[in-house]
Image 1 (cartoon, rainbow, N blue to C red):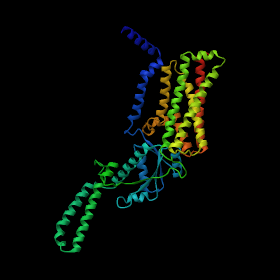
Image 2 (image 1 turned 30 degrees about the vertical axis):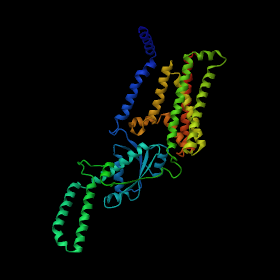
Image 3 (image 1 turned 90 degrees about the vertical axis):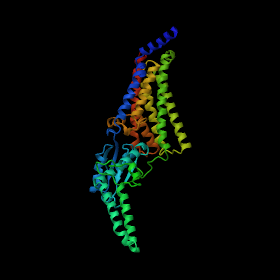
Length: 441
C-alpha cells in the first residue's frame, strides 16, 4: 500500500512541477465557468441584443413609431438602411436579419383592429435559426404593445357589452318573438355582441394589467389573433439561401474536424520532443526547417483531405451543391493554411504532452466558443459579440458558406481568405521563433 501511495505522490509532484499542465487541470475549468457565466448572465437583462436592420418603406408616422419602438427595445440592436443594403448585410453574415415595413404598414396599424392586419417582411440569415424564432416573438410582442397604447382597458368595455346584451334581451325578447323580422334582428344583434365580446377578450390589458405586451401565448389564448403578420422573404434575389439544412450544418461540422487536426499534429510535435524522436531526427542530415516543413505539410494535407472528404459526402449523399467550386476550394485552402500556422504556434507553448494538449484545446475551443461554434453569438453580451469578429473559426465558417450558398463575389470572399492566410503566416512565424529557442538555436 505504501508503494502505491509513493507512486501516486510521485505523479502528483510531476503534475505540480508542470505549471502549464497544472493550470489546465485545475485553473482552466474555472476560466470556462466564468466565461459561460458572463455569457448567460446577460440573458433576459437586455445586455445581449440581436443585431438587425430595419427598412422603413412606408415613411408614415405609424411606421416611424414602430421603428422607434424596436430601436428602444431591450432585445434588438437596430440600424436603418434600404432593402438592398439590408439584404446584403444579412447575406454576408453581418446582421442576423432585416425587418421591412412595406407600403401601407402605418395606415393598417392605425386602423387596427378594424382593418387589415399590418404586414412586416423579414429576411433572416438561414444559418441563424436560433435567432429567427426569437425575432418573431419580439416583433409580436411590440406589435401588441403598440396596440395597447391606442386602446383603453378592455375589461370595462366587456362589462358594457354584457350589460347591453342583457338589457337588449330583457326589453326586446317578448316584443320581437312574434315577428320574424324582429327575431332576426335580435339574433343578429346577439351574435354581433358575442363576437365583440370575444374580440375584446383578445385585446391586451391596460399597461398595469397582466396581459400587456402579449407574446405567442396570448396569440393562442386569443384564438389566433396577432397584431402583425410576419412574412419571411428570401434574403437576396439570386442564390443566397442554402439548398437544405446540411448546407449549414456541414461547414460547422468541418470546422470541428479542422480543429481536431490542428490539436493532433500540435501534440505530435511535442511528443517527438519529449520522447527523443526529435533528437534522432536532428542527428540525421536534415535541418529544423525540414522538420517543421514536414510537420506543416502533413497537417496541411490532412486538413485539406478531411475537408474534401466531408464536402464529398455532403455533395453525394446530402445534395449540398456549392455555389462555386472554385471559390469553395480557395476557402478550404485558406482555412488549412490558417490552422497549420495556429498548430505550429500551439505546439511550442507547452513543454509536456499534458501541457501542450491542455493549451491547444483550450485555445481552439476558446476560438470556437467566441466564434459561435458552441454558443449562439446573439446571446453573448455586446462587447463579446464584437470580440467574436476576431475568431478564425467564425471567418472559416463564413468563407465556406460563402462558397457553398451565400453567393459571395470574389471581392467579398478574398478579404476573409486573406485574413485567414495572414493569421496562419503570423502564427507559423511565431511558432518557428519559439521552436528555435526551445531547441537551442
